[in-house]
Length: 257
Image (cartoon, rainbow, N blue to C red; front, side):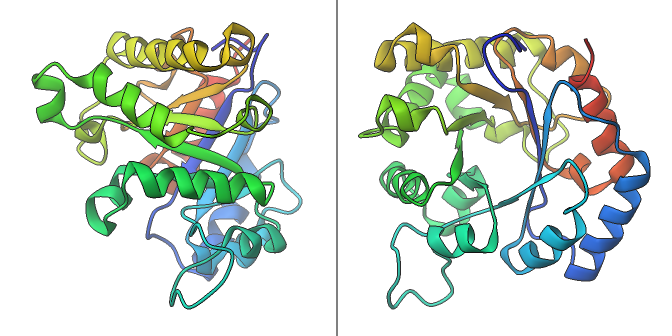
């Protein structure tokens, strides 16, 4: 982490978990143990049907509510989709875009990710843009080529001013929900490369201001080591974000002086 230049953000990604009533129960429990996050921002991205309940439940806490997905059109005949303006009107501030599960199960591509990034920025939201390689791609030695392509594609046409609202999350596909985690050195190497890619695109000043998260099975046991890497500025947390005590343990790891 480098707090001198950029925010540290610990974000939970609940995926398709918890009902509205369970959201309130989580918030009630979290409230009793959540520390004052002096050094990091805390964010919880919840299923779209839970957003109103989450906004109510977390309103008196230092927890920002985000969404897990967004569509790139403003309105129209797109049954089941949710627009950026709809999220903004609810009070959402962040939205996850391009998560590997969206790419794997719902056919998202680098092109649609780019469209969603532009739609989110136009509505005033902060995109959390996910990039990452599969185990096969890592073993083939094309990790950096793929990451470069994903970053450049996602940010194509995004101005330097708007880029400041973006967060990049490195999520190695082989470490999501598998219990496997990249070593701090592996994760740090890719996050450093992501920053170098952004530096090449936008210059050094912009690059060092962008928050880059790690999101491959971060947990209370490995959070401190991962967050000690200079270019890892937080985490996009899956399973551990569903349990208040584990989520708080990660927040504490990011909250150390």
